[in-house]
Image (cartoon, rainbow, N blue to C red; front, side, top):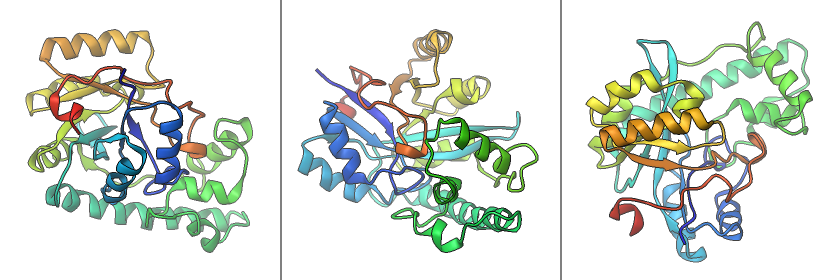
Length: 273
């Protein structure tokens, strides 16, 4: 029987778990098909393909692009799967985004330091690992060892990065339609990520008209209403349905690998990956 998790993150972006640790945990959880969709980068793909052979797992090369719905003023995440080769369009789109993120997070770190918190750039950046980009999660890991979903962590995080926090600002993301077109131009399968989490349903119809291939069904933040709405939309438009855990290790909510899975893949290119 297939056990499929197509949404996982590693130390190549904002996950706390190395790629090999991720493969080890996936194998132990009985997963058969996985995709690591690190944010705005494909640097993990080559190592992932090597580890797939070592651990006898089907590995689908993927990415999660941090995009935006400028019409409605909200984030939209776009998943790209079955990516091979140079993927020049995706890299051209995402490299400036990674640069903006790194520079902005360094600015956030300076604001936090000026507010009196004892954290150095060295302490934050030593947690970058393979990412090459500093994330808020790396700053938080340098500030506290409490669990992501604990009251202490969430209180500190919100006080710094949300509302009137000293580091409460964000970068300019790429347009969701540009993300879709880049994935398609590089021969990938474009899937709308967790529409229930980001309320991306309104833009979904527009993305479908532009060639969207699928929509994410299984996700820890989706409820029964989301399931019904997504299945209805997928059936209406002939969309692929995907899903996964959105695993970030200790940098995200506590998720048990093997719990948020798909048991079927409906297109041959996935099955034979």
